[in-house]
Amino acid sequence: MEILVCIKRVPDTSENEINVNRDGTDIERDDLVYSVNEWDNYAVEEAIQIRDRVCGSVTVVTVGDEETEEVVRREMAMGADKGVLLSDEVFKNSDGRGIAGIIKAEVKKGKYDLILTGAQADDGAGQVGGMLAAMLDWPYASLATLIEVTDDKKIKVGREIEGGNLEMLEIDLPCVLSIQTGINEPRYVGIRGIRKTASAEIPVHGAGDLGLSPESVGKSGSKIKQLDYFVPDAGEGAEILEGSVDEIAEKLVELLKARGGIK
Amino acid sequence: MVRQVFAYIVHKEGVADDTALEMVAAAKRIDSDASITAIVAGTGADLNVVCNEIASSYQEVWKIDSEALSYPNAEAIRTLLVRILPKEGLIIAPHDTFGMDLAPGLSIKLDAAYLPDAVDIEGVDENRLKAVRQEYSGQVSTHVVCDISGGAVITARPGSFKADESKGAGGQVVDKTAEALEGGFPETGRRFIEVAEAEVGDVDITKSDILVSVGRGIEDEDNLEIVYDLARAMGGDVACSRPVVDARWLEKSRQVGTSGKTVKPKVYMALGISGSFQHQGGIKGSPFMVAINKNPKAPIFQAADVGVVADILDFVPELTDKINGSR
Ligand SMILES: Cc1cc2nc3c(=O)[nH]c(=O)nc-3n(C[C@@H](O)[C@H](O)[C@H](O)COP(=O)(O)OP(=O)(O)OC[C@H]3O[C@@H](n4cnc5c(N)ncnc54)[C@H](O)[C@@H]3O)c2cc1C
Ligand SMILES: Cc1cc2nc3c(=O)[nH]c(=O)nc-3n(C[C@H](O)[C@H](O)[C@H](O)COP(=O)(O)OP(=O)(O)OC[C@H]3O[C@@H](n4cnc5c(N)ncnc54)[C@H](O)[C@@H]3O)c2cc1C
Image 1 (tube, rainbow over the protein chains, first blue to last red):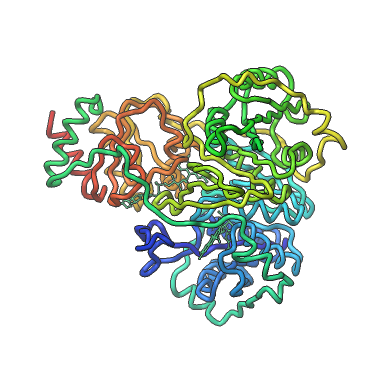
Image 2: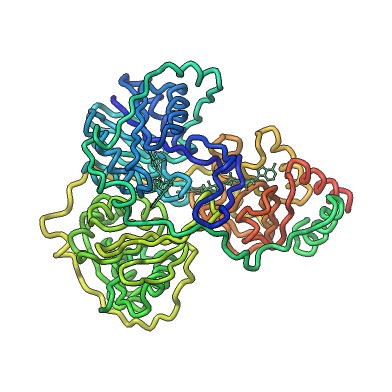
């Protein structure tokens, strides 16, 4: 099985407090710690496990700049066989559709049976996988938490729906799936493992290599644009308890007692 | 020009989802004079009940009735929608597990813009739709403009638009089945087998009055001890957010949220939980909510009644001691 996994480099929200920059045009990007989108680690782990069961190879692909290469190496350290970086000045400011179109062009250069994306990334959009499938005219299922390879023509997929129930599906290959967290336990990779991939060759493909016209991607190809970033008015919000730890705990115990929170 | 806005209605067992009325509100935010049409796919008596139920809220209800739609397969429904939607139309769906399945691909097939997970809509100026989205787990918001000259697919975040209860639309149900099925029911490479129900766990958190709920902020499985201690002191049960289940630290039956349990306690303690809409979607009945989080900007403080900005690893044991010492 030839598997392609799409990965995105994102600011790590568990490591950073995200703030809006001074003129509201972007978030404050200095000193941000970046990592692989949480969902994508699950996708790469799943691809590796499938490959180990049925043979084949795992390729990771990302659209980004030179700095994005580090996340490709990280996922290769997890066990992906190959990595590709799709990078070009004209790709900048692409919207989700632009990103999907760029990846589609790369897919057309290879021969894949299965493409995995994360269910969503830092924008909470969850768009690239479904768009890519529609562009390729391949079947799609979002939010997969179970994949069983039946044979080389089809797979069984469980989609996690409301209430944590699983919608069981049979899907023809090739197809695109978006992966939901919890499908597996992604393996840990340390600095040492990542260093081992330092010499691995990671080809970089630009618009020319992919046969993409500059107007179809980047800002000119985007139907949706961010105007500004802001922090919404706090509104009512919680009453924040102030004081020493002791005082706060004391107050909280009283409040809880009054509300029946202590039996 | 009267703008045409469509809403795709999610329904189950003859009952329209709460988002059905929220999308009316969202459509009116696009254009208060818009003609708003609901699209409902399904089959039999259940379908008719849903159509009649929402006709009071939509000017028109388009019904697609087919045996093959007894379970909604987004892949097939996408094709049906492409067959019946006018060019340059605007269609809203809920940003839930169905909408996430349907919408991105629909925007490609319609060659329309895709606006995912809108939390507010500020209106349309010419062909520019202005909306609000959230990024980075709700830590910041952004205004986006969407070029809708070629139509748009919009998913609305469940719970973000206040349900429009006006019910004065007096809409009529229009059977679109023939038009939608012209050329036959769509062949898809994806076949529905069954729904496997989530496992039942040892405690039923949907019955608890007091929930001590823990999130990724607990950092390590071993630290769960302090959460159990607090729950014991309060006489409540331990619940959690999704990452705690993903890490296999607690069983799935303790997960609160849209893809977990819906709970309705009297008191809800959110410890190291950021407050994503999927998590909050599982908390009903407006409990007295206490949030303890080290990030003062965590969205959970918007939903909570009382907040403590603190490291839970330090504060929770203090609180437990105080409670135990107070009896
Ligand atoms: C400087 C800058 C400017 C931008 N300008 C715009 C703009 O004008 N308009 C706009 O709409 N958006 C803009 N964006 C955001 C946009 O480029 C997003 O990256 C794009 O919408 C896809 O990300 P997502 O989070 O929506 O992906 P989602 O669809 O939420 O992610 C789901 C999955 O898709 C895959 N995926 C997502 N992104 C990539 C990628 N880059 N490479 C490989 N796989 C990927 C991953 O598997 C991921 O898990 C901008 C971003 C930056 C950094
Ligand atoms: C389709 C779908 C369905 C989903 N369903 C659910 C669901 O049912 N339930 C659910 O919960 N999620 C669900 N999610 C995931 C959801 O989007 C969030 O990712 C998740 O809720 C985040 O959990 P969290 O708040 O524990 O973690 P995070 O968002 O990482 O937040 C951790 C918080 O802990 C704080 N913190 C860290 N360390 C400490 C400390 N030492 N002391 C105090 N505070 C600390 C941080 O400031 C942060 O606010 C779903 C997602 C999708 C896409």
